[in-house]
Length: 533
Image (spheres, rainbow, N blue to C red):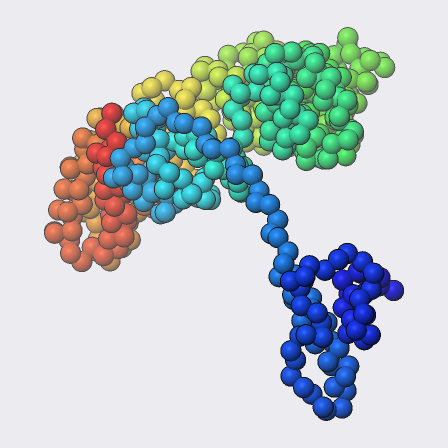
């Protein structure tokens, strides 16, 4: 049953009886209901219709006199930008990359803006903030170019929140960090927790422990990852508790952090399991699933407790051998030098005839990238990746991720030499190509690589058959070259492509690849000229 309000009661009373129900006084300027002019209707039901029409008209009169709600307070203006805006031409050059989603070229433009001490102007900010598909690294590079106004503008759209989050430096202020922890978004709370960890790791850990059970699963995993700042053995109890969390993501984060602590019980237990998993017979290294911990000092109840701790990361069940070998990525590679009393190159060579070679070397490669071990990187490159290149019993695992992780640790000339060889004698292997090798070289390329690339490209075009498409190695290499070729070689690159077009007008299968290549060079040239350093 609905309750009739005073206005409705007044209307109905006046319409039916001509007298007003007791209530608030009506202003003298408000017309009486019997004064409202309505068209006469003598049809059947006219009286009821007349009542409703008068009531509706009366409601319209009453509402017409209502005052609007107070306007909301205007937002605090954006802080002043210390850096000047770039020129309109430079802004348009960056906007072209954003509109075309040319994120492969955008990082160079943003780096030049930052080096020149410039930012994007206001009219480009919505486009920059709205661009989707950027990696987290590219977004981080974009934030300085947004300036203070861009970060201020991002607060008004939840989809732009990534640009408005406070920096780590801002969270070094205890009061601001506490406010973000109490009332902020998840991203802000993570930033606050990281700031607290830098100042007082124990207090930040206690704060997370107190809130742990009240947090949602996604939040628990994300907040737990903040303990990577000033990680220590004092964090082990909370991380061990998280190993049995309902959230798989939280368990994974806890495992990763505990394995970064070589002295943690989980890291030691996993190391013991892996020592029982890898076996060295003579010079041959192999793997088997361990049935018990073999170390004498870990026998009995203590040993079983350690084993249970290691297996907890696998849900308490006996893991598959491949899953256990994947944990090799957490063990520093020099541990195996001491354990087996062998140099890295001999250990890598020892896996040659093992059916688990891929898994062992994959784990070692990731551990090498984590530890930054140059000797192990060289050993894996020469002992495994090189064997793949020359086609000797190639592994089944994709190599791009491993190559990217090992490349910074290799001697400067190693990858360059490999790239030069690959240009002349391409391997034509889909999982290891000229493009992947070139992508690992520092950018921009040095003159030797640039000159050799253009020389071999011209030779390849001269020898190409018009009826055949470009080799796969070159379709993957041209986009990499477009982003890495030094500016001083742009003219020569265009000349090579133009000569090919003039001499081979029927070389239509190359047309799209070359047009993309020269188009990218044009975009880069525009950025370089408009944002001088």
